[in-house]
Image 1 (cartoon, rainbow, N blue to C red):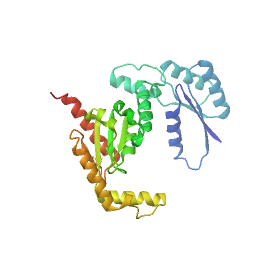
Image 2 (spheres, rainbow, N blue to C red):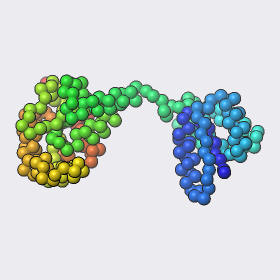
Image 3 (cartoon, rainbow, N blue to C red):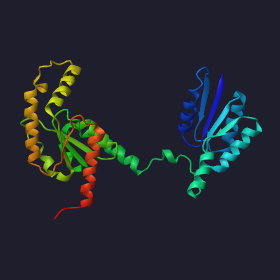
Image 4 (cartoon, one colour):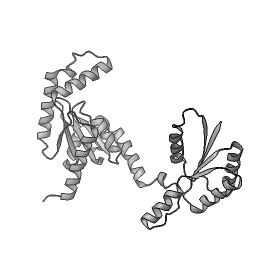
Length: 273
């Protein structure tokens, strides 16, 4: 069996993906791909190259440090192992193009920074505050999404959370006042969602069918849905500072883009007197 040895000073994921993508073009060949990650010592390189020589493997490497690249190339040349440098040529071209020397620090692509932890915190907050489960946390949210059932509150909240926003969503239920804690939230952070009745009937009917429930449930009846939408509109009218977005036939990404655009516009305009 043919073999390819991947050597990386970071995770090796990128190099492995490139190799496997290229191998897809050779349908009749089975190839053993071995990945050695976080290789940064000469002794490690020597052992791996010796193993590659035993396997008669092709060595594919991604080492950001120029000295390490030269060292590995020399080791491969010494034992007559074919090798290809996936990153060296690109680094050289980028150095010439950008007029700056690279830092040579391995693993920057996978570095864990403040932004990573902020997004993790946002996702955790959003999951815990889905569908009005923790009203006391509403003042802590960056965004609060309000709407009747099946207006995409949860997937929209999750999508925004992955961008680093702590999102809570509150269901509007016919005849029931929204939680009192909602009044403590800056109205500039609250967004209402609405939808056209015909679209919601189809969505709810599909939901009932998926759950194996009767199709004639009031949950999916047009008259009941119209009353719910009318009640939600009444709630929205009481809060004129809440932007209301119609989600009918719109992708989650589109609705999220509208919310973020409004947020940026409000932030740039500053507080009003």
